[in-house]
Length: 336
Picture 1: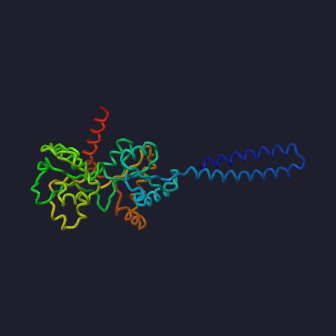
Picture 2: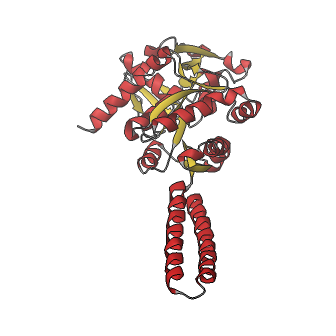
């Protein structure tokens, strides 16, 4: 941007010198004519400099945070302050402001990344790593959402159900949250499959539950999952410990946890694949330093009670291996 302005100045000054020399050699009253030409050229130079500034402003673009949600306006309100903060502090990389772009599903966000329309993405491990595998985004940090660095997935049943282990779920129905939830779908599904159990998606009223497999349906919300278990619509439900703990003790007292996974990072942070090393380092620094200032802590608090961004510990990185392996198998099957 500065280079364009500099070139304008060099060009105008060169033209000024040539015109002055020409007038000084041939025109009567050369001094007066030269001063007139110089004056006009200075005005032209000022206009060009202003034009260069305008062009530079037009070249600056917003720093875009991508997300997945069915309610774009809610997601935009949530992430815009962070996008604006990053955009304001990344001016040396051509950014000037912030923006949030919301996709309806994982494939939609992958397409946006591949089109170069997204710079940054925060989500739970399954969704974020799925996007990363398909678009090449780079995982750079962990996010402490709701003040938690990690969480587990659990499978719950009603206490009086007689279900005491995973094998007892054969011939029964389990509720998952949605097909891109880490704790409410992928981790419990992998655990059931690792135990030698088979699963098939169940559609109300149209499918028969076999005695040797587990049927599953999507509740679309973790609260729905527990309500369905409590009301007997399903025999079991998968949910994250962070969500389970938010329910009233009276409700939790009616439930029994029959399975719990190892902890995994609460959320991860990624940047698009062509983000330069200096820009990545700057983004990391801006996020890690948020907890050191009152304004930064306030910004994080308004972002779903985030308390910290930090490096991913080795044990946390290792906990992501089953998810990465699952995604690799899925890609291999797709490419057959």
